[in-house]
Length: 96
Image (tube, rainbow, N blue to C red; front, side, top):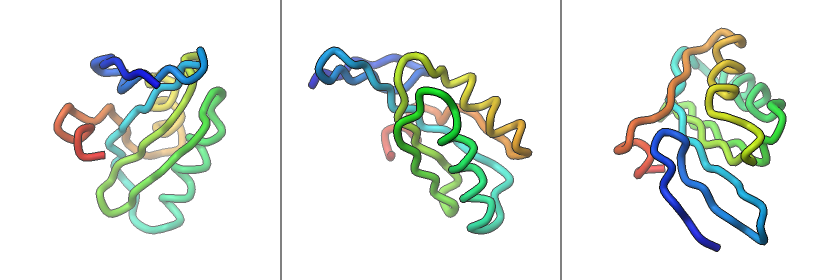
């Protein structure tokens, strides 16, 4: 497995010639576990998403997806669901 930094796109990992990307996003507007589930569900429904971890208390989501899915698509899905979303900054990504 190899890793290469992708700036705002997260971290690209190549596993047997299949590229997956780990994107960390800041999420706003989540108030309870129902909100966390709604964000997790909408992110999981985006084409190319393989895994989603949403942390209500830290207000972030970590999404593992293939190269067919872009961070912009992830953000759009969350915003259309009624929450705020942006890519986490470098210091936030390092924590998750």
